[in-house]
Image 1 (cartoon, rainbow, N blue to C red):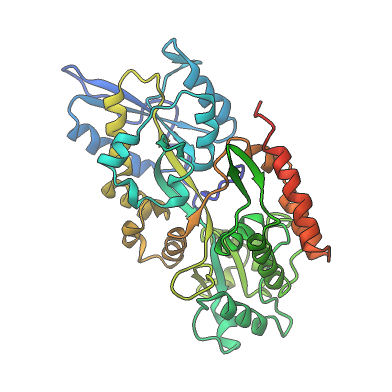
Image 2 (cartoon, helix red, strand yellow):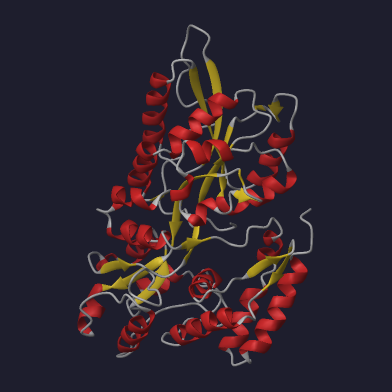
Length: 425
């Protein structure tokens, strides 16, 4: 994803560099496994704990963890996957790479990733992975990306404004959510601040109705915003968005919704829990007044669908130590260390059954509940073309401005279909 939902926390960048994290073990025939992880995905303390334990329990392996920047990572990973000379630029070739979950199809399309289907089915419990992480890592029945951690949107709300409106508990269904939001949209307050082009949030409403942004048919992808199910999702978005003053022609970053929420006149926003930090920095008076609940679904038995961002771990085909790479992936994504990472970084673990690890944090617990219903963008490498010049945003603005939804959806769907036929450069 262009914008990382994963920016939930900020950790110091001064403790990790491109050098190995821990001194390599000496003596014997120890082998070094080089791991590329992304900046701020794991804290220095977590990486120290993991490295020390891994090297203690794998007496033939040393870890060389190298921290990468998200900016420009795509071409760097591609160069590493294509390299045959044992070097990727000035760095040793990685044996394990962290990639964004929605980036996996692009790397699979260009070749160079190791098939990890056997390990995922036999040892790693692939049936229990969060679908929003697992599905992008799977192409044509083959598992290349192994889910590591996730993050997704929840509803962040003002507990005091809910109480003043007589709302004693968060809504659990869409209808109850609309009713509560209408009550909150009074007395100079906005019931919800929802920007008109927040297409990630719209995606969840569409999925809840059984629709999709695009679907594959006989090997060809086409836009599907004009299906009845997708139109129902857009209609719910329109009704909810009308209970506030969010701009119809901008997304949630223009202006940043954290600043709007901090202004004190908004009852709810839809965002990752970590956004609260920015809100409180702007308005410390809101300390203790903010709560979280999962985006409600059509019925009370489960939360609504949400877009799931996160990271998968992949192994390049050109690794010279498959066994070592698989050992690292298995350890990092296993229950012990995946739970540790989730607690440390306020992430969602890669399996719903591990959500108990974050049950003590209200925001993360709400996020984990929603992640069980999470999805990702269409699993095709050409989806990056759609996001680069996004017709979904234009469609949303048109509908909110009064254009006939079917007409606007048909136009956007045709544009998405055209974009999905454009090969990535």
